[in-house]
Picture 1 (cartoon, rainbow, N blue to C red):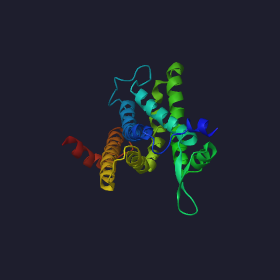
Picture 2: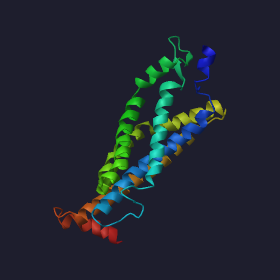
Picture 3: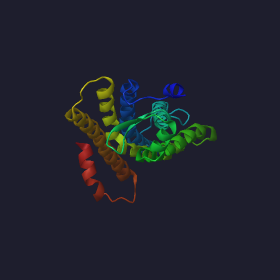
Picture 4: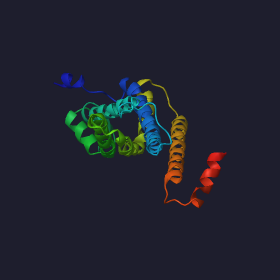
Length: 231
């Protein structure tokens, strides 16, 4: 029985984590950048300022990449709940490798990571279903609400530091290479900086679109906006 169970368990020192960990980090960074950019694109398209040539029959083919990332996160949830063994600390302070499937499931379902994964995944799954049925119903103008529905996926950034730490840990345990904390910090700061800059640009672009096309916004409020965009 133990031999049969071990075939379905992925240990923390498995080479699988060296491949899976970076994929999870890149998928998180992609979603964190793509989700707000799509909202701004659809805001511009809604007011006629920009018409995306990628939208066909109410569906954007580039969303396939988004759905692939979301599928990766769903698989990651299943792996954590079923086959990812983890290290635990015993009463006497020694590390214990937990491989029991029931203990693995309880550990993941009771963690903050599961709550974040669940909250981030449900709206994206719903948006995928609506995006598929909207064209058949003749509602091509639902792309902006669907883009907004994907924004909760940004909550995965709460686990971003943990994802990067998992990659460093996998490299240390599987590849037997010493990954310095300074390198991990630099990589994390670089990725987070790119994401934050993208978010700031999207917020500014969204404000610009609203400022130019909302009659309730006074012209004085748009003065600084016009001056910046004209330079």
